[in-house]
Image (cartoon, rainbow, N blue to C red; front, top):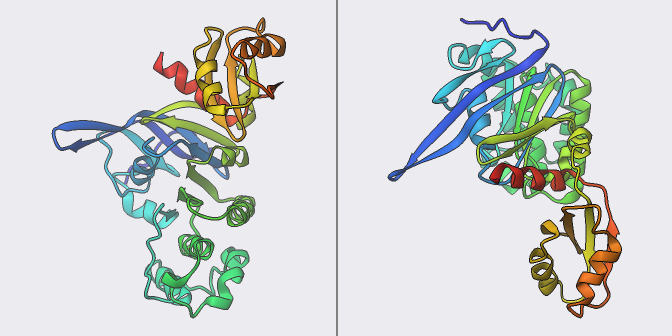
Length: 317
């Protein structure tokens, strides 16, 4: 058993993890030298699109996959040498619903409790707030549950052995907006109980609910910080623009030399300008040259998605 001498305040330490896959004749780098640490009791988000490497990273950290190089510890224990100890300390909720479809809600939970030599009654206080919402359906087969209830059951099963670190891989993907909101409220309550939580998500709006986030793209970390700190680093002028013929508007804005980038965001295009010299008046004047009508231009503050796009563009330069 090897215990790390690293910072005792860190529940998770990741140092230069690399993971590659051989797909046919080509090599794909899923995780490319990723490093970060997560403090005890922190709610830490790994935010990025599909294919960013989030799931591969979680599988390495939960001892299900061996990295090609690098080093990681969970509460001081090495993820390779001490995997048996780590598996007792962590809870893992994979992205795909992986419970037994033919077993009932109650049977699934009892099964997972038994694996860890505990009982539902022993740790009921930990899952009480969540389980009470699905308890009326405890005799229903897991395969017959709605997406939101499957999510709650999977979380209960991940928590039933009272883990100190919880890994949730894209837990809200494919779940309705109300269930997503409820789920994040549940995570805040679990955090208040001292559980360290790592959650991966492709939804940029969920980043703001984390203490800190790591923005991940193509196996690399683009930035790690508090969401508000990441947004404060966005320096270019940012405008929301709308007009008649939105398809032509996008093409017209992208061809303007004064524009750094332009992308769709709800009913508007978010337009990043190279200079403060090009403001509302100049943008409208430019679009009027191309006979656009109903032009609306307003300056806005960057959100986490804007920051992610800017970091992505910088990494490609």
